[in-house]
Amino acid sequence: MKLSPSICLTVAFCLLFVEQAFSIEVGDSIPSCVLNKINKPKDVVNLDQYKGQVIYLDFWASWCGPCVKSFPYMNDLEKEFKSKGLQVIAVNLDENIDDAYGFLEKVPANFMLVQDANQQCAKDLELKAMPTSYLIDRKGVVRHIHLGFRSGEVGDMQSLLKQLLSN
Amino acid sequence: MFTVFKLQITYRLLCILFISLGLSACSVAPWERGNLSKPQMALDSHPLQTGFRGHVYGSREATTGSTVGAGGGCGCY
Image 1 (cartoon, each protein chain N blue to C red):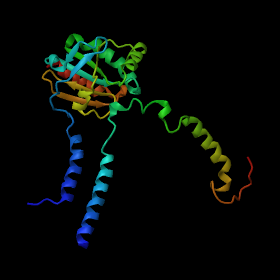
Image 2 (image 1 turned 90 degrees about the horizontal axis):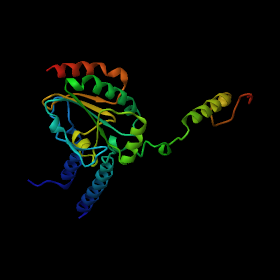
Image 3 (image 1 turned 60 degrees about the horizontal axis):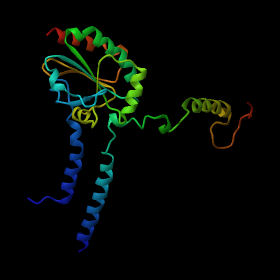
Image 4 (image 1 turned 90 degrees about the vertical axis):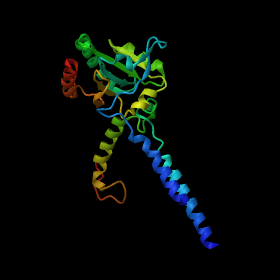
């Protein structure tokens, strides 16, 4: 069968968009992201090592307005649920890490802060918004994805979180 | 001969079309918008002031009907 050039071109063009269709959805396993601690960049953190714990994984950047509002909430989560098996991990995606340090001087954060220096984790998860938070169960399966942050929207997530922690 | 030439033109046009359409597929990821979100990158650096000026302009020029054409209003402030 002889393919005409225009058909080849059409297929190639359509393939440009295919990549966008594979993002992590609720029910998918979380890919093993390799991240670095923000204050000790040589310390590597792998999401796999928290299997068996419930993870609240949040992606933030210093320039992102709603991220500022999500920090007190994550502090509360850490305080209330850490002893029950929750691991809060906040992944910074600033292109310039000094911006993140400046942000952290103003906004208190009492949970695990890591950076995704080459943005591989963000690419693997195909983030659609800043901030995005993922609730991951003890088996490493994504159970809830929240785009953006509004303090009034955390209710559903919190009841699911309690349910996952009791499992 | 003519049809071959015509096909070549069509092929080239298709190439240009797909390449130019493909340019839009190169998107900025949500986490790469740090520089774009800086105030100096905004199209309008003073949105409140622009809104206020628009309001004043609109209310004072309302009698003329629009920003173009001859006015029939009193011209009063």
